[in-house]
Image (tube, rainbow, N blue to C red; front, top):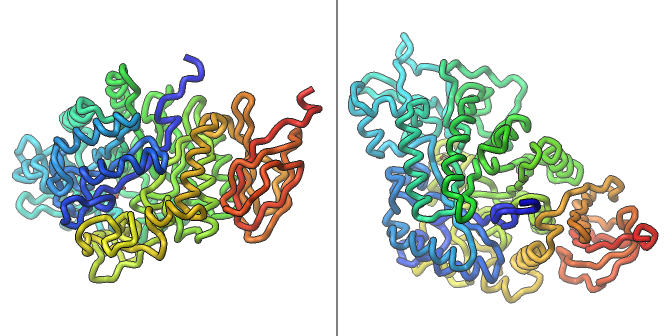
Length: 545
Ligand code: NOJ
């Protein structure tokens, strides 16, 4: 079927952190019924179509749900399985799609699998996790580090062996080299597919396969780091503790499973994969595009925020993408500093335009559509275990409750003391921003509407324009007879912009500012400082002739 594009390519993904979206019980934690009450906002008001929910499963919450104690149930804090079924039905009734978080690398230490595994060396579940004897000096089996600080090994005194935990010690790593583990996790996938979810976001997908010899990681002498500094974790090159090539076989099998459930509509997978190298990143699509539908692309988080670096990240991605692979872009999530605080109030509007006009599926993080800044959390209110262990790396600041209105509880809850403080700067809430045409929310709404109504923006090819003014990134998106120019000024100064060669006239579709009045554009125009523009452009008559 030529030109067929499934929903996960045409749509926009919106990430909900369930704890912080909408509380309906007054306990200060968001829940699934709360999400249901906000579906009309998401679909009709904002205009997104795919929702990704961070974990809502039973969990001791050592890592706020990324430590799962039961993969096939709903934590009572978030509601019930009936609430989940209702959510799926309500999402589908609106023509939207639901993607849930799958956490395959580790369970909670309280998961019955781990309780059995640690009970004795002889337990049939022992080998479901990664157990090793101490070194002769009693120390950990190798030098691997936990992302969250310290050694990745914890000694279980009762049985005299160490178990591996790439994150908290409360999150023991599963042993994916044991076929029973794979079978059990694939049963989890089946369980949710049967409940009609549309796909999975796979937590630290590449971590599931490690070096079978468990060699020491080499020291990091070149200073290469992921997209942000991770403290002591960056002292090693993470060659052996994740991303072993055997992971690809697992993803091929997972893809076959998803495909088997794709008769009525395509089911989808997107992997959270942070790697150093583009080439390695691209392998996660699979040689025959038979692995993950997409590995999340975090490259923009790594780019210096200037026209040259941003363009080179995008061109780099376009160049490395395997034939037929679908790109995607991410500018924020529950692990990253809020984009408003990374780029400032003006450039975060330019960032919104970039994210929603690039070729590929964009992922939006809840609250970024309001321009929510990173919150400052008083020390006694901090929650994130990472931040509590490694000061400076905490993620609470991007996880505060969604401000729906200007009341003390922000319309998030009936309590004014939610799990993290309401942090909203003046006017930054849905109600007030909806009535302000110059608000960040109004900009996102316009951008999403223009994207939806223009095939060139949804599906068209991407062509960067070389002769862009200094500090500007200009590209066109093109589909059949439609060509749209995206012009982004990364500087605070105005810049004179010419339409690309061969184009004589343009019609302004959207500016990141509110005060643009002109609609017709001749060969040149002035791009204001910090402005982004979308212009539908028409070929010069000589080109048409
Ligand atoms: C990545 C998730 O995005 C993060 O929030 C979590 O803490 C770790 N994986 C561990 O599951």
